[in-house]
Image (cartoon, rainbow, N blue to C red; front, side):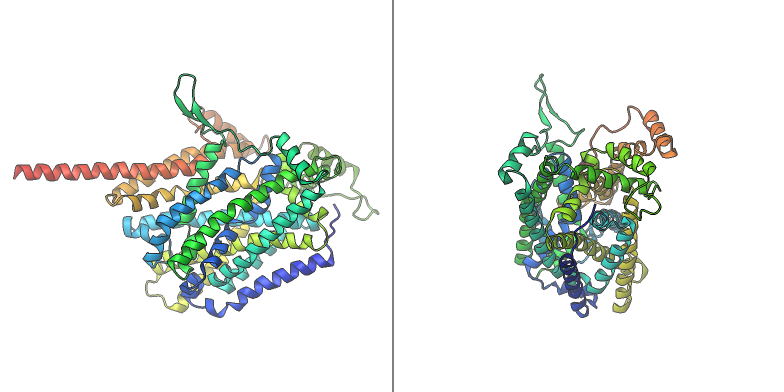
Length: 579
């Protein structure tokens, strides 16, 4: 594919990059203290913090994977967005006031106060693992359009991106991250809306025709409801597939975790100038994501109509060849060209292999690559640069937030808690800087691993976040809901919850191993596990991992605390009777 990335696109992209990096350096002086680097002086306007939360949520996962999902399937994943206002209400009602009153920068200090230091470490470890996974998926998806447009090795793009974002986060601290996020949010929304308009007008018959064709193809379905009554009148709930109810429950529990115990969100609550400002910012972020995510799903649906129309017969085969070529490169098979022809004509042997690999790819396999292809080939000069800048902005806002929040946790929950309780300002700042660099390396490394993925990046992220989340929201809710719950109840709940999460995770590990090349060691291990654990594997969909993990910890903790309280009351009553 020949890209039409013109000098105007370069001007837009460079101007955006220079502008956002300038914000980081502008706030360099204000971020050179612990308070400035981690809490922005607790004085920012609510709307800025709200846009920052929105921009953090609207990562390149949303920008590219959501269109990829609706291109390959329907709007089932949009149900996740519908859960966000519900979680926002819980956050405004209970979570935000608690953190604003606590004065703590760490989201997990409360867990230590309620259950001991182990609880704080449990939550922070899983949070840090989640951020590595999140940064990896985000940077991988940001590198995709760059690789498609310029033909660069995606691994090089990831490396350059990882280094750039790490420098930006290192320099600016949370105050620069939040202000840059606010600017990026506007760029993100403008890019998406403009791109959708161009796309709709490019479909024969215009927007009405595009929506009608998509509706006829069932592209607007939210999925089977997944609950009802059996013929015998017994209520049932299908949790084995991504039904409407499964995705809604997954979204509700993941977003309760995000709003309730995610360090990235908590720092924005604290950075707001007042409780009222924090509430306004949180509601802004919660409600803004619903319509904007709908725009991205509509982009993917319109791409389906656009690429399957008779007016663009060459586009879909071209995308398949691009994806096939990338997969062959992942296997160590690089393009071969006829000598004397430059790099314009592939050798017959390689071309045959490429066409064979491309023919095996369906819409699911190419979903994440279609939107970058459209950006590179069909947008007019200037808009291509804007959309690439928007994708870059989406990733940069999320990754920089993850780096800052991870560095903050390492400093507060580990260095100042265990290594040096009397650390000076300078020592803490050095820890923040070093942690930013280390987590930047780890996130970039995860992105390089994800280059080998063969399925939807959104599914990969949702599964990883559900597993790494570890049901820690259940421990947080146990501490807030029950004053009777003590350390034994919390420990029991977490241990049982971890066992439940492991049981729910095993089928996903087996599926991953079975997808590896047939005959390889990983594939044989998958077959062995599948055979040996037949009848013991979890029948539930991966989206139920955070649901069951959270509920298990919460309910087991409540039961144990209630039982312990009854024993104590009974013992006290018997002792009183004996007297």
